[in-house]
Image: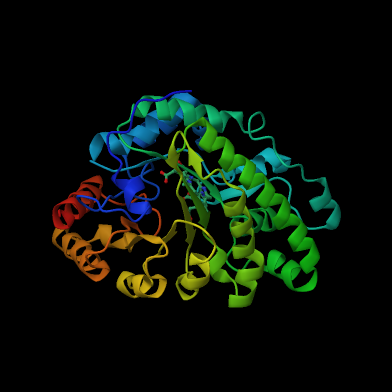
Length: 353
Ligand code: CP3
């Protein structure tokens, strides 16, 4: 497959810590329920999973935020739970309750029975979405592919859905560590194959979402989350179509462990809002780029407050290469789309070099 040449490569350059004319910006969950046009497409699809499985509609919603705002990257519209679904666990969404699985993974037999999905066939609908979106972008901005981290995927698979305390998986980690390792290793192999397939189909950067790694102790984080993200980073295609494919690791609540994360071989770290970005930069030096880190709740505040917070983060990062502006977590459904626009415009205005 050959695609149109890239017209805006600020995002890829910043991830490689190269100089840019202004700080690139995108938002986690930028295609989502805060946009009325997203809600209309989702209605048309029938359900969230139907939307993910229809390449034309997944493409339509991926492009929606780009039509409204001058963003510097697009992110594949899909979900991190596609892998456990492809492993046969039966993903479904109960309105108001988040994701659920019909089958849970708790025993040795459960782990042994899990297949490693074939990314091209079992997850072919995701690959079709990637190539459809990449074609439709026509070189406007780069396309980000993504996956959940093995640890984060395991939380949903073992608990059977969202959880506050992760009690079944944590009990497994402490009393049957070898079983947890067997599960995480299968997931790491699955994620590696999945992300490499996304890269071959047109993803130009990839992000690993470790939403729940921050719930672990420092030692357990290294052994049960970071280790498997590192295994993935080691197995990824790092050059494609004559360009580097940057890898971003995002551990929510991982601010205490930035140095070890920076040693994983990734190109950039995603930051939530609990750490000052200037301090984070001093700690990782120029080993990796940083992506973040505005509290998404700032978008509930006045335009004046949004602009002040953007300026504060840019000033704290300072005049160095290697910053991709983003929220510290996904944009929430209640945000006024006009406020998202104020945010994007402020980043572009205040970061002009
Ligand atoms: O960023 C983007 O625009 C790309 C799309 C994207 C979605 N999910 C779409 C989605 C991405 C990158 C994800 C990742 C994801 N999914 C994560 C990691 C990032 C994070 O937020 O920490 C996690 C933990 C999930 C699992 C998941 N999927 C949950 C917990 C939920 C329910 C959330 C809710 O608010 O109801 C989903 C569903 C989901 N994934 C929605 C969207 C737009 C909402 C579904 C809907 O339209 O009703």
